[in-house]
View 1 (cartoon, helix red, strand yellow):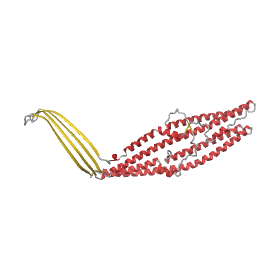
View 2 (cartoon, rainbow, N blue to C red):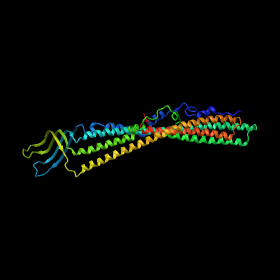
View 3 (cartoon, rainbow, N blue to C red):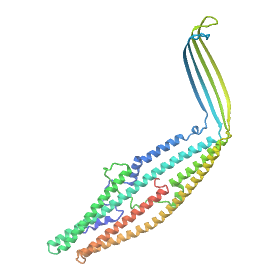
Length: 443
């Protein structure tokens, strides 16, 4: 029986042809959507942003006046039997006071203004942290997805190599039956078959572990079954901006948070300076007081029963309160000095993060350029190895090439395909890191 060189199946080594992939492959976008819905850090950041938005209100900054209703009531019971007192007997008394107090701070050293700005910056900080949590989740999922896809592609290569080794082994067995193949050639073919079987088993194990890591990153149960594919060699998608360095300086989450912290440090210093200014507040209100006294006895002056006596009092008040601290032992001065130092620290932090982001992006861009060239060269090498495999298959079938030499050609093709996959994977990982630094991994 002529040898069945499965060159049609071997063509699926070509990256980008979705052969051997099921129609139920889960896209990267689906994985990201599911991961963001299940990510605990992202959900926490969402709620922290909602809380910061609620707190960002002028009332919490001290802009509005306050109004309070106060009610106070007290009663007492005394049994007085004192010969020296003009009033003896069981004395019951009670009083109640109701007040309505209003206060409005009209000037407090611009504290309300700076408090509003601090609350705005805290909400912006929560927004940046939500963006960072989403991007970190997305980066983790994308890298896990790419690794699972790499392992899946490598399994496909190992499976096709095993199919070819199986064909050669069966061909050698048939030749041995007809006396055209020696025992050594059969053993060589069987050794190649076993080696490819081991490679497939190991590749399948690594693929399963990669899928488990992807499911964990998505927050999904590890027993779910799905396939991945379509992102490793998707050259049509946009991967980076035209000027990634400037984009990173404008949208990097870590840099954005450092700038927010710098602004908060400045505002905190202004708040400390506000303690040097006078505080002016308007106060007004109304007070109603009522009391009642009951004595089980007679009035010593008239001889009549004392009975129950009541009284009320109404009072309205209004005023202006001015306070200015004059001496505090240098507390305010030291607080302001500390605030200035914290400002410098936050400014240095911004400078450090800026340098780190700029250097990291520039390095990754240079790396991505070299990796793109490597991908192009490895693709050409794979094409060359594939053509060599086809020619060598014909020569082997005609008896012009030994099994050992043909096996070397087969391994060279598998190695070229693996090298191309690895180059693609490394390029995609670098692109993901660039998109993370530029804040574009989630659009």
